[in-house]
Length: 357
Image (cartoon, rainbow, N blue to C red; front, side):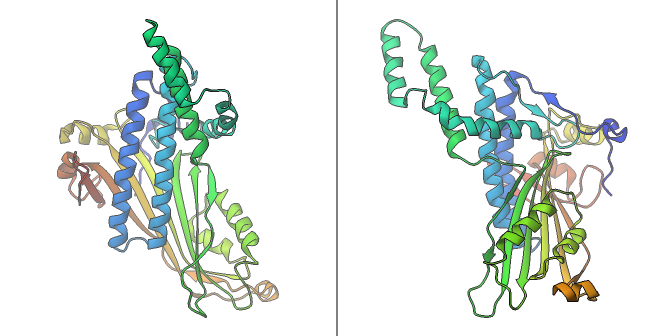
């Protein structure tokens, strides 16, 4: 059982915001970027163990790459504070997720919309280099040119790369080209705003006879959009998918990334004890939860189902598998349990980035 231990959350205060200091922002982003790359390796190992499908693993890997790019852009953005360019510090959720707050991602989206326009007013890189050389030969420090170079680097990366949004739906793919094989897969990603956690959901479904995915794509997008805006359990999501007459859901998988405990979070006594006892030079705990549910057969059709041509499906148990990524020193201390002593798949990572399970 997952216990909500933090006193602020127990009192109903909800997730809080904490401003990181100027000298902590870039190290925080660099560490999170690296640890998300390690988590990608963990999920690849979980796929090989049969805990998630290849489609879910690939989609989550793409999502993690996008998240890493976004974290890199955040580091560039807030690193510009040292040049007194960006007035807003990076905020994290210190009580529940340990991740950057949704507000920072939302502001980054606004910055991205303005970045292309601002690039037209900044000199090209070659011109900035020429101006810097001229300033150096003139006996001056090229401070202005350094600011222009950093701003262009930030705006180019922001304008040319997709950053994480609160919701994005992936294209629907057919898993086999064989005639009569009507198995499809689609995925969507998002941010749980209330908890500042990231999640990726993958749906495998078959197509009812007489319907075609090309003609029903808009209906599917609208249906998934209505599902993603709420916080539903997997069996509830399958029930909502049963409302589409041409979709027969088969499996539904959800991967939640986080919470992420580290030196800047308000760690409770359980986690502090593990951090101190393991003697790790840079302690952290990055969690991921893999949930899977499958349909077991056709459910009883009500009169409205017959009227609209729906084929509702019954669902099996919700299978939940938790993984924990920690430094190798903490893995040696924890073994195969989490900080509460509950069974958990714990992955230790060495300083060279090698995983030990």
